[in-house]
Length: 239
Image (cartoon, rainbow, N blue to C red; front, side, top):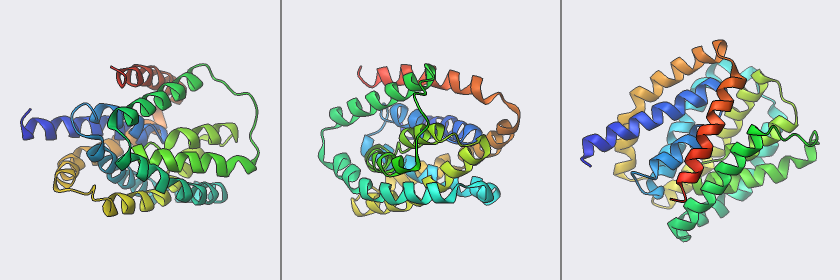
């Protein structure tokens, strides 16, 4: 694959994942990470997804910051700060086949959880630290902080507008540490910067279109389609 083809394919993947994130508030890393790892190393995919995710969060919060459940977002972020170093260590120290396998299990579990609408109980706020720590580990290792926080927010019964805004606030707070860890770990390379800049125009377009879709689409139907696609992507991680 030529460099031009690689940049185009990377940009298209990030466009798709960003469109999902802007439309429903999450799901970008769950889409982008498994697809990107088919064409680039996971050590390049993780910082690239974190950079794009931070861009999306800043853009969305510029309009919706008043809707954040600040207490929950802050406590989740504090717990995640403890988990992120463990995830960064896992990313640089563990064999890539283990990393991809764990990522596949996370994606499949998350998709099945939502497809079967498993809602055993309403969580109390004391669970915030467990889900925040787990999210931090996954975020540091695979830039996939979303699943634990989405499960937590669902069981806390956040309203849709609060859900989307709170996720962006949490993602932005934790991404500061994730990006710093990637930089200190030597994962910010010229190749990552080149792919980010090449994808940025399509990423910005996806944010704009996703914001429009957020007001018009049936979120529940869209999520069902997303979870079915995630099942396929998760299974592909084991191939």
